[in-house]
Amino acid sequence: MPSQQTPFRIATIFTFIKESLNSEERDYTQGSIRTAVFLLAIPMILELSLEGVFALVDIFFVSKLGPNAIATVGLTESVITIVYSVAIGLSVAATAIVARRIGEKDPEAASLAGAQSLVVGAGVTIVTTLVGLFFAGDILAMMGASEDVVREGTMFTRVMFAGSASIMFIFLINGIFRGAGNAAMAMKSLWVASIINIILCPVFIHFFGLTGAAIATVIGRTSGVLYQCYHLFRGHGIIKFKRHHFQAHKEIISSIIAIGWPATLQFIIASGSWILLAKLVAETGGTDASAGYQIAVRNFVFFILPAWGLSNAAATLVGQNLGAKQIERAEKSVQIAALYNSIFMGSVMLLFLFGAHPIIHFFTNDEAVAKFGILSLQIIGSGYIFYGIGMVMTQALNGAGDTRTPTIINFVGFWLFQIPLGYFLAKGLYMGSTGAFIAIPVAESFIGLVAWYYFSKGKWKTLKI
Image 1: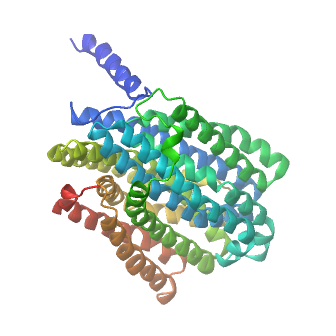
Image 2: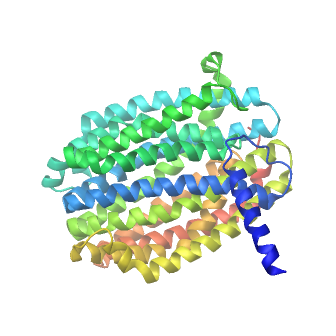
Image 3: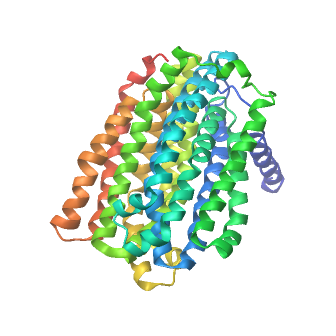
């Protein structure tokens, strides 16, 4: 009997995966909640996992250029996460509003909201691009980079900021797709971006050095945006962009800003904390500590991105089900997503605690750099289960349009707790970079528990957007 059932089960699994990867918008206000979680989460996990591969490929090839190159990439990306924060913040608003309109069975309003979010994103991008172009060297110096790192890395930083439009739109448009229930299209656009970058990165580094890595990244992401635009404007899905959708609509823009600015601030607060900790590591441990930490962070990001996939699934499910006035179903969706995320993150925690040595040595043979990378990976990984819980709860609140509560939680958890703790341990107790590493899991665990508490209170259920 088991031998007869096994082929059926395998066939069922493959059919399920195939269905999840179809580029179709879906209504997740009915049917099995577990099925809905997986149909959304599978493409989101694959989407963000390849984004993680994208980051690891960069650091793998860049690491061959030496500690200065690694430090340049790490410090630049620590700052450019502000651009990511704005992009993610606006995408949160787009996902929340589009999902709510889809749940209300109003695709025209969903398309209008998506287009208006792109208008807002375009305005923000102009500012971030100009800042990076004119102040690239100053940004690296501000981050505590040595004179050698500033000299070698300024052009890399300038190119990365010049391509900030591709960062903005690839995340923002994917937020629109996710709100419409089309997680597969969001996945495919990042696949296009990542695969092109993976192909171009070693080639461009060979010809242009460190700057080539930045050029490859910008070309890859731009290709992903072009792929997104093709599918948005050809008009075969629920979301159909027309020219009139881009005429300024004050009420919708106000709604996007009202939801988006706290979400942006939410991620800027988190990013700012990571920037200061990266600076603290560089100041207290030098270039070797900074390089080791950046390698560890890339691995940290790679393994946490699938968890973001489950968290984003929770946001879409909350938005659509609130739009359909199915509050209990929205809450149950979040509970299931949190359970799955905890199981996954617990497994990764064990991997980091017991497998840090081979992971870090895959990226560098420099023992001084590896020592810091291994230590930071083990310490940061110790709080992974709490990261998983906090991410789902935070994204669920964001999906409901309650972006202010997570913003306050982040401000308290990062700026009033993590940063002071990091500086106290690193400089007050003379623990150096180790103190900065310890502050990360302690603060993230605190944030996860507080986010779970506020989600349980249920005020998000009554929010109108």
